[in-house]
Amino acid sequence: MLTTAPRGTKDILPQEIENWRYVEAAMRRICAQFGYKEIRTPVFEHTELFKRGIGDTTDVVEKEMYTFTDRGERSITLRPENTASAVRAFCEHKMYAEPAPTKLYYIGPMFRYDRPQAGRYRQFHQFGIEALGVDSPAIDAEAILLAVTILKELGLKDLHLKINSVGCPNCRPQHRAKLQDYFRPHLEGMCSDCKSRFERNPLRLLDCKVPHDHEIAAGAPSLEECLCEECREHFEGVKKLLTAAGVDFEVDNTLVRGLDYYTKTAFEIQYVPLGAQSAVCGGGRYDGLVKEIGGQDVSGIGFAMGMERILLALESQNLLPEHKDGIDAFIVCPNQDNLEAAFKTAIALRQAGLKTEFDFLARSMKAQMKQAGRLNAKFAVIFGDDELARGAVTLKNMAESTQTEIPVDDIVTILQTEVQKYE
Ligand code: HAM
Image 1 (cartoon, rainbow, N blue to C red):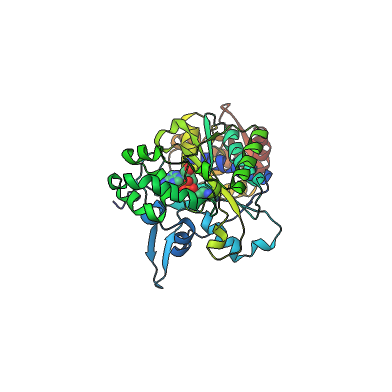
Image 2 (cartoon, rainbow, N blue to C red):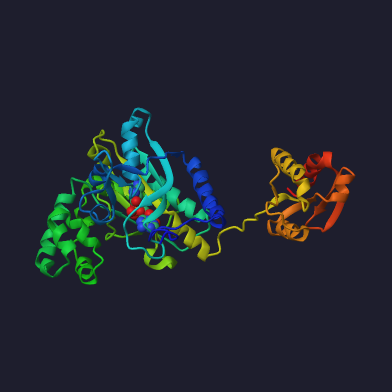
């Protein structure tokens, strides 16, 4: 147990890190093109922020939060997502005083006590964006375009973008009443979650995964029929701009996202070959959230992508570039009497910017040469007794298997020149 990570978590090993960096670099680059700036918020917040922000009746808040009381008797929760925290930071640092929009992005770990399976973890990582302070559908379309641009730039095809409008506080009560009228006669046979949500949040009944309930939900009245003029116009605006940008999408009136803060636009991008956990990106507009957590009446839109799912998708399609690991020089020093000279040379080479390693285990000459090969060294610098007696070392070009003797004093300058030939 002590040598196993907790269920639903995993180590990201050195050989995987380059893949993460590659994906993150694409995200950062494209965010810069779209004018988004990075924010890093704490991994834990006051529990109340998520209860108020995400909603008491959501699975995330009801069942999935890592909540504990700290030594100061405060209820603290490891963030299950970053939107509420970003909005909290927006209020706390009075970002609304700057000209709108405030465009933020983040990359970091999130925590949900979910049932672990491929593509679903208890600690997972999200890349996400939030744009605050703009009501225009243009910012919705831009946010969706940003998500699509990132996924396409990484090479993913077969992406399926679904969009919907989930309405606003003006039109939702009408839909809510219609939903309750529809579900009431079926409620007896539905699951306990549906029963408890029937009064509190009947929209969530559309989203139930229990097959029997799901079938009933399929016949429920659509929100589209109830949308108010403003929501309808907004949705039309988003669709028009997406079409103008050449983005393919499907309108899915059953798309209800699992977090309560959404208003108007909701969207999801699926990478279908991933199967059960195919949602690689989800987001939408949240016009009431800033006010809900105590800020001003400022609108917002954003999305988040699951980093692990994107990496799984890229891996399955062989879309991750090959990373050539290697070092510039390995110092081979079979005689421990020469260790100090070898050590100093390693320091000098590193100070000159060269990736340098040497042997720590007093291995034999042969074993040290083997280690130089394993580390993919461009050169081996051999501290042999005979050469050292002449004030020289042997420089071996590992790829070409050629070697020359060079003066000890010139090691740094010669290696700098030689290594440059390979760049
Ligand atoms: P979400 O749909 O809960 O939205 O999560 C967004 C994405 O995070 C999912 O599409 C999925 O790729 C990934 N994800 C979620 N849970 C897990 C998990 N247990 N394991 C692995 N990946 C997971 C949000 O979190 C909203 N904050 C998005 C947003 C931003 N809406 C507006 N702004």
